[in-house]
Length: 234
Ligand SMILES: [Zn+2]
Image 1: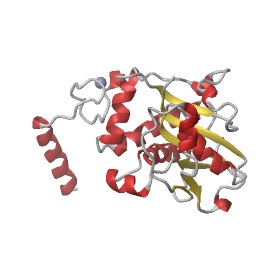
Image 2 (image 1 turned 30 degrees about the horizontal axis):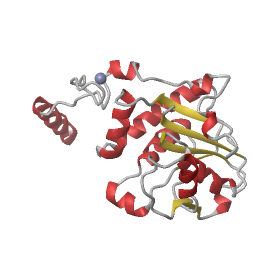
Image 3 (image 1 turned 90 degrees about the horizontal axis):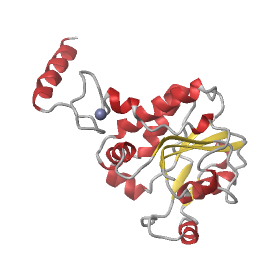
Image 4 (image 1 turned 90 degrees about the vertical axis):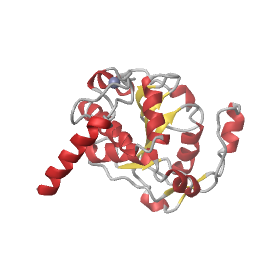
């Protein structure tokens, strides 16, 4: 009790000098606020892919893998709010912002009746070398938020990244697909068999990383495969 009180005093005192700022607009957050101010939270550019008749982002996967649901939380625009959030998640040592986004998105999914649509959450893994560098896997934190609210277990051990690859951004589509061949592998097929898998990542851009993961997951005979990402770029 005393310790908690002291912690509160200490954080109040520190916030006089180092106020917590909103990632989106740099304004001082209201007391108790974290990462994003109420206005930025309200203005998150939601895609609402789960409510649309015609799925968005579908063309990225067409002819490559069989997907049931494509769930993208918010639109990604260059220099936009989503980019700021994802930048802090990935490079700003703010893994908890991923968990927060996961929880918020999970409430939307629950509201849409998707609470019982999946059996297992699987985050896109980092190569061990990159994981050591960054200290955390940002996709896993997004998955953690979804997992807590939806009450679905997360498996972080059976989809692994076995090859370290360079940035994908400047390659052609064919070369991107080629360059991720053999990059991911599955440890225990049985853990994924007959499951409705939700593969989660921080950002959907070309889709080639997700496709590479889905290909190896597909070899485990899952019941269905879906994806969920925080951001989605057109
Ligand atoms: Zn803000």
